[in-house]
Length: 315
Image (cartoon, rainbow, N blue to C red):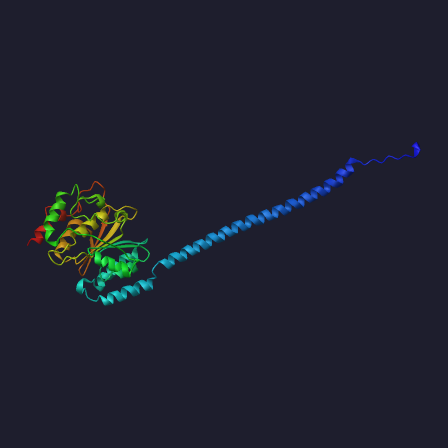
């Protein structure tokens, strides 16, 4: 019995060889499978992100283009406004005056910040031509402000109680000169100023805007008891001199520039050296920022010294 017994041995190397080959192959396929899906996932993620970025950029560009007033529409609005204002009767800007202001608005490298003194026949035009930018109107009449807001809620307008008068021109100029280093200096925050010529009761944010274009077409100034535009011109000059931001220049337009108050105050605070264009009764000035230690509105002109404009007005 003992001699017939057989012993069967399984060599471990045989089992290891067969199992190792199958396991390695399995692991290889598993690695390849996982690698493929990992690559596919990453590729899909990157592609989707790039596609979304491109779509966002396209959408942003399309939105920017949509927000901008197309040039044909801009020109059409200006054309019909100019046609209806073929003469400057009734205080309206003439065709040439309209085109002068519109040309500057059109050239703005970025959306314009446009401040307008006076609610006029051109109010809706200005708000439309500066569609992409900020346009704010300031007027002496709270009634007109409420009416324009009721009919056109998209327009931002504020009323101001002017304390100046056309007949006070000489005393106001004298006051500004006596306070040139204090309350009436050319670089300051008018919100905290007690200068008689400065407008300091507007909403705070108006004093923080870097205005690119300012149009002085109000308040009334055609009779001695009218508020006149002394305060508006002085305020425009200070806002321009005290401007913040990268853009260093501000375009200031003064309508009815041929009248005494407008001419003298423009000479005094905007300066003849800065007059770049005169179209009909519209004066166009370009003002640069000033250092906070400056105490002359017109350092390169004789208009702010010794009172030459006042001597002209007294003749």
